[in-house]
Each structure stands twice: as C-alpha cells, then as structure tokens.
Image 1: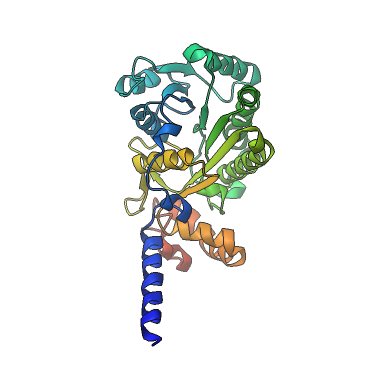
Image 2 (image 1 turned 180 degrees about the horizontal axis):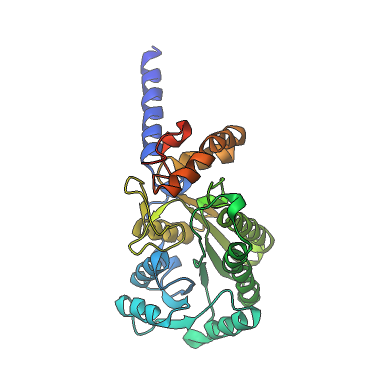
Length: 326
C-alpha cells in the first residue's frame, strides 16, 4: 500500500533535483516562464552601461518588447552602434542617447537625470536599469590597491546610489517607478579573488533592498538581479573577465538579459542567474551559512591560484585543490 506513494515521492524528489541541477536561475525565477509584456511596452527604460555586454543585449530585447529606451555609457560611438542595431516599436529612431559617467560627480549626474526626465515629452523614467559596473582582474584581498578600491566603489556604489537618490523623488511624485539593479552572485556569497568587487556588490544589495522596504508602499519597486559567471561576446559585462578558461560553464548574456527582464516584469524582489556550482553555493550561504562559508574557505586560496594560471575558477575540483592549472 505504501509502495506507490513512496515511489511518487521519490519521483517528485528526483524531478526537483534534476530541475535544480540543470537550472540557470533560482526556483522563483524559474517558475516565471515568460515576460509580462504589458509591464515593458511603451515604458521609458533607462539603461546604464548600455554600450556593450549585458547592457547591449538588454537594449536589444527591450526594444523588441516595445520599450522607449534611453541608452547611457561613456562611449558615444558605441552607443550609436547599439542604437543602429535596435528594432522595435520605438526603435531605432525613438531611442535616446545620453552620455553618462557614473564617477563624474553629483552635479554631472543631476544634469543627466534631468535630461533623461525630459525625453519622450517629459513623461519621465519608468524603469531605471543600473547595469554599469567596474570590475578588476582577480587578485587576493590583501593585494587590492587603494586606486582599485576607489575606482570600483565610485562606479558600482557611489555613482549608482547618487543617481538613484536624484531620480527617486521624480518617481515618487508620479507614484510609480522601478529600479532594476544588476548586482552579482559576488554580492550574495564570498568571491575569492574579487574582494573589492564583492564588497561593492554587497553594499549595492544592502542599499537597494533597504530602499525598497522604505518606498515600496509609495509605489517604488526594486528588483536586484544577481548573475553568476556570464559569457559575453566581447569580454565585458556585469560579471565578465578579460580571459577565461574554456571549461568554465557560463550563462549566455542573451539568457541573462532574458531572465532579468522576466524578473523585472514580474516584480521579483531578487533573482539569481547562474549554472551550478555557483547557484548551489548561493543557496548554501543563504540557508546554511556555516556549511556555505566552510565550503568557500576550502575553495578560496585555490581559486586565486587557479585564476593566476588561467584555470577554471568555478570548478568543484577546487575544493580538493584540483584544477589550479587546468
């Protein structure tokens, strides 16, 4: 009598484990199958870091969904290149180019924000996608320089937060607005070899989750997206490195952008995007921190050595000291 229920239970557990092993996102994100187009179409979407990597792909996918786009980065020629490739209800002719340097100071950011608010007949920014980021080559925590610390935090933290502080009051007056923050798995779990980058993303996560808790009842939404290793065509983007081991399994930038838009359109508060083993480590650190940090302590030094040898920095073999020279 008990055999059939037990068999069904085992099959259910097996299916769940298979889904977890093959997933490229967290369980909640994977349960949202499609973009809610009505949350994107005709909305004014401002993307920073839009000249390459994930930002460029986000622009292409959002244009196809009918968004009214404002593209920002420091390189005007690259932004014009991206704009020329866009197709959609408001693209390419309706796409606005807005030069932006997040490290340029609050006065410059205010001017950019006011200009963005004036586009599209002054309708204002509906969705702000904070995608721009600064990432340095892998190095140990003690080798991080003051220059790298300042350069990373100026873009990833101070500039991003300042732009948010300037834009949020306009959203509050309209009673609506959505900040989509491209953070990182390095903002959820230790990232050996990327201490400064990880610190900047932890700071970003803390600020934006707190911002949402303060302003949610006033119509402001925040979606924090935490990608793991992402494969970009030009070696740039939120989590990309200049050189990588060919054995590293990375989510494509197209899939990352797709899942980001799904998460935002469904109003998810946080979304994780990665293959294994990174996704499993994030779950461990989140729900079983003692075990998660024990695992990262085993990996840490080996990962820094693997990076120095251009090896696979995401291999489970690092637990046992393997793969350093892979």
